[in-house]
Length: 389
Image 1 (tube, rainbow, N blue to C red):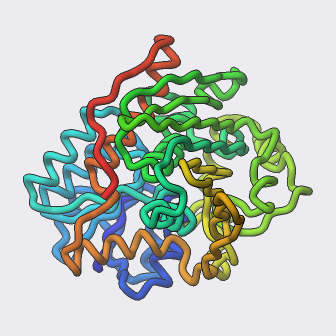
Image 2 (tube, rainbow, N blue to C red; image 1 turned 180 degrees about the vertical axis):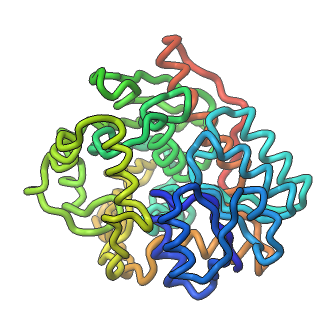
Image 3 (spheres, rainbow, N blue to C red; image 1 turned 135 degrees about the vertical axis):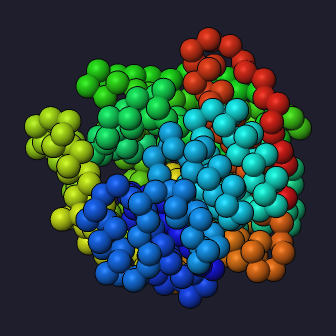
């Protein structure tokens, strides 16, 4: 699949090992305002560097546009790709309003092309295995899901818009997109309402840093979601000290993000430090070998009428009426390969997409409902939900 990339920042940096190691992908073009990033792309791939997203989308060598630009530009860049008749892989969150999502869905449909939104953690091997176990009837009808994640998200280097909720910043826009996507998949997709609370506890990072939400499904099941990005308790302690990307981590690294942030003097220095760690930056290092475990988004427990499931970075624990057993997954040979599997199935085999625009719009709707419910202190009814298929 011939891929052109819009945005060579953090999202691209995380997807790069997948693109490099999966022979089904060829990177042929890129655009980004950072010259060091585009220069690195030219050295690594010999592809065409374009001055604008519109120019990249018009490139006849590009079959699939990977939109990895900042959140507030997703809408503009997907519409440019649709106008050029390209397929799209779009980073989460899909957009920062439901109306933008709908316009993107309509534009891609009019173009006769497919939009897939990811990487979200519902692509992760353990989450997909849990869904398969549910489909096999291992735990009966799902009634309750509990998901939580405690990280240092808010204290990693950020651009100003990443700390501005109105421009797609904060943990709800960036992190609820993962968590909602996982529980929607495990629960079948069809949410009916959301009740939530959010928190802003640090005036120097003026956006939501934590939330808890109760998501109700149309079939009577429900899910509780809790997330904190304030960098104190680290829930990877409950995941066998496996980080979100599947790599081993040390408890001795506690507080590292806060220490790094304290070492920068102002906003400009923080932005420079973030850019330095991205692709082509002075501190960027190519990924080493694939981690020995799968990616994850914190502890998740699925409760059914006949048993429970607990997701780990190595597989899924199954707790039945009479036995407890572990269904292991082989170590990943290519990180995030599941994203390429879905793209390949859609583009080359004519399969229906799981993570298409309608699915992602429903996740965005539920994520934004967390903000609205917290602000207005009431249940938020949902109208754009679709089932997992």
